[in-house]
Image (cartoon, rainbow, N blue to C red; front, side, top):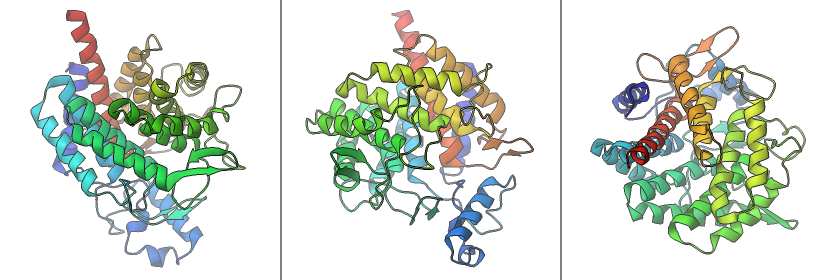
Length: 389
């Protein structure tokens, strides 16, 4: 591995392995045994506690008796990172870790049928609430892609078969078909169309079809994807979700959409024009001139490590179409390391106007950075191999 990336990956890996990849999450406040008293059992109280703990520059979790824990999405990111490291450098220890955590995912599904995953904490947002363990499309999609990485990069067919079972869950429990259209819901109990979530679900079906040959999936993916394609705005952007109050556009969710569309293109087709417009918007509106990722179009702060990590993933996903994408990913990776990586190996959360939160999170910052940097190493190793052939 190249020196500029190898040392940061090793530091992040050492930090995660020392903790067995257990950690805190920005949204885990409701795991506190004190939460029922602090929130007075109200929706507003749960939101206030969640946001207060999330935004505090001091880590309040030890005082609130919130324990570090495994998170299914974080473990999926970690498993993908290890699989990529194995593919990049034939690191046997990385292959062993990838297999361990992929097995953990299969063993810790919380879906009633097929395979699906949720978060390890109760969630209260301004839109909806759901209980710990409730399978959601975000955690499930990232877990499915980790299983695909295990199939594709490790050469283990069992992980592809497991990924196919996630499609069974997605179609049976999250596919909404009504009013002449289809899309994937965020949760089994909600009907809101969240565009990045829908595209992530479609990308799982598309990649499963491409890797395993399941012929029943492309048409379903294409049908659900259409509901998001028609929502693209004239400037190339996608709103977060459908409906009043949901029209904001941010960096990493746009990255999810673009990366997901790239995965769908192989089996759905006819996406290039929309992808190009979306990429033009993303590149134009979400980065400062020095490459710093902005949080919203027109708003830089907070500078968030999740935006750095997803930008790397998005650039690399579109590298076959965009000259210079690998160079852009490398610049973003360098900034991530220089600005957000702590000396002990965890990745800081956010830089705000008056303070920086360096609270160590696994799902939101450290695991995404590990996975993204590992992908960059894999791409660069392949470029080097092609150059020496």
